[in-house]
Length: 326
Image (tube, rainbow, N blue to C red; front, top):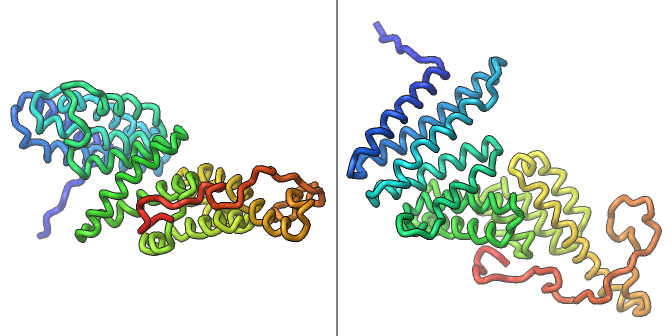
């Protein structure tokens, strides 16, 4: 006869995961070696996954709870954080970023991003008992910089967002060149946020990069093309077609800020045409040229007289990585 497998309810499995992690953390503190770090990583991964499944089951059964178990999972991660962060064993201390990245996943899913700030301050603190970021595992560094880059987007700190996401992108590109399949998936995740930040800062992705990343990033090619041409209608169409995806990713409001750059490019191009036709009215443009619905669309609007005629006026410039960005 086939053996019958006994399966615990999802809520009970989450409770068992919490108990297992708590018991393991107590033993982990007492050990002077780092051999249990892989086991700690497996328990943390199981805790977060089980919490998500338990919340999904509770929501589907309409029994309340919402994200209660995922919220509790964040608290459990904070309890085991000192076991690695305060450990005198260097190899055990390197597991700190593993816990931090797991907490980031939980906080981003719960939309409690303010809780990330304290963890970032702990990791990046300049003290003798804190490891420099460069001494952590490369995979954990990439994950950490990916989340800090996304957090910088929410804080509208776009230079930091660009720096952190570019670091993660460069490391994954190097791993992808060595044939790493996970690196390919991570590149697509990073580009979802790196491309909008680059666009906002005036750096356009090359079509080859977006084509290699897959069809899910084709939308950014349409947006980049609209930005270069000053095509307001194309920008509106691209944002409308990808509205659901961009809102889910949290990049819609970021891309909406490109409107001013598209308007500026449109003004520049029409100014060049108008200047040749009628120099006296070189800075007067008909508002219908904006291709937007306005109640006053038959009025003229004045353009800045200091408008420059080079691409640098738009911030559309090249950068050192010429293979993927213009």
